[in-house]
Image (cartoon, rainbow over all chains, first blue to last red; front, side, top):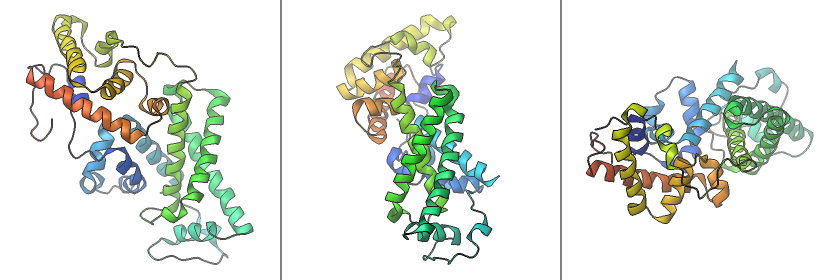
Length: 73
Length: 225
């Protein structure tokens, strides 16, 4: 059993997952915390869980983080 | 952080708001004024949003099959719409981040939405097709183990047929079997990202539960289903 890690990861859901609306509402706060090296996952575990599972929101997170870091250069 | 050079604020009357960093307070103050200072600030904010949107479409470009002038048009449209969103939502900025980080978020969202809409200009698959042959590649099944995963795929297909609601099935088929991006499906169904994600979330939970109950996956994580 569980010789199908990609399928298992995809189907596995995290009850802490806050969903897209809440994650996107707080994305700017979460990104600044990550960029500053702060404990983003500990402070916002529901957002962290969501960003791991939701491709589009994860993409938005990566994009905003890149923007924040890029503009700081 | 997204910083505005301090010297750009020199000589301008500071507008303060409780709890905001000085730079964010300046942005918020000047954007709620009328007159040439606001116009200049809008122009500068637009420059920032264009820069961020261009960088974002360039970052995503190779994966979304958009190139050249079309990609730049998309970035410029995203920046313009983001500027509208920011100016329309100024009252919602609560100072939990820098103003510019909050504003850049809308540029990223607009890029996502526009890439989702762009997908349907050249759709690769009809929405209602069910391409189960894609599943092994989608989840990296080893051809050498085909005898084993054929049973798994058959069980998953039965679970899709027997346990999902019509809406869950529609979303699962479009995203998982047909490779439709979630944001593109949002456009096609006239829904929201949050609503489609929730449908898929519930479908994933149901399907995993069935596969665990039938011995295809191991339930090794208490609290998760």
